Length: 478
Picture 1: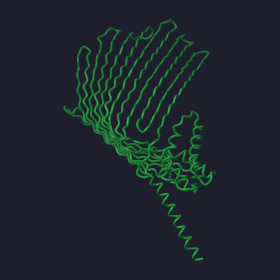
Picture 2: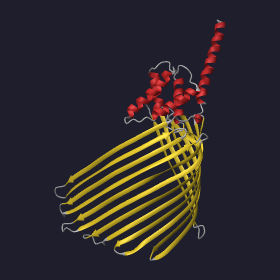
Picture 3: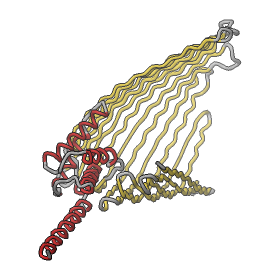
Picture 4: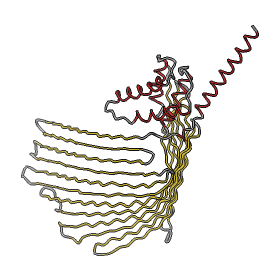
């Protein structure tokens, strides 16, 4: 009896130690070593809607209106070890018209409008084997809108207004840098899944580090499939993950315990984004925008002066920035995030206003805004389980601003302002389950902003302190 007891005790101890080592191995799986597989995803969304109303009062008024819109959006995403590319295109059409008749005064009012917005943009990041990269991209956007409003009284006199708006913008950037930030949320979800299976005694054998990595990549692949029906997408995702465990002989048996665990982790194991890596980039980004606006108003009913005005607005921006990002998952439960940037910007605005009716001298105004800013932030995230996270973040910014404006309308006026500013922000938040029945959600934000205006003349000092918070507690009695 004694001889049987000693070997049995030793085997039990070895088994317990092995399970502890396995669990420890999963917990120590290095998320920062994960990278997503090659992914290509296309998405095209079309939508449209229309609504209208008709209201009638036999002794007062009749009103009706109708509106509608059409929208189309296309996106292409590609991620490989050598390239990250996005292409986006959108177009939107919308219109509305309304009519109102007052039966007592026989007055009629009509309003209508049309809007068209379209844009296309792309971004590229080209990597070499040492993760040095070249980034470039930009977008072009266009917008047109028109509107009218007519009011006619019983004598057929009219107040009328028409307006047209046309805008176009061009944004571009080019940068060089080194490093890469990876999204490792899928690897974290894989570890959550394995730990849950281990806890519920579902696994038939241990997973190696390579198998955990392969499972994580399979999760990334199935998530990037395109499905219109979310239910079919969920079924496809769960089926692929189930096939991975079955094909590799990892499951003791596919019972209710197995599938409920799988569904639970799949639904909640990726709610909090995790990232890993670091990058630094020097980027130059110029942009230009043109806005033209025309408005004409004529009055026969109201005691107002007819007017006709054209506004031409030109905005150009030149931005040079040095950007550093650092993301480090410190084991499965902690996340360090550091962001820092140095930004220099030159912004020019030119506005010309033409008075066609009544005839007045054109008004011109121009401004230049030059500023430099340094920003830094640190965030600590804590993720004790799939449904809980806590975070604390502190950020600091310091800036110098030079602003000069000029206006000419018969007389020329020039204003120059220089200022220094600084801001400190502290953010705290949690979504915490004390128990399956008790949940706490809370956020708190504290900020202090300090600014010194006109530092070369009569200085004006402004200091603003802001704070706010929100707290919610939920308890399920039964």
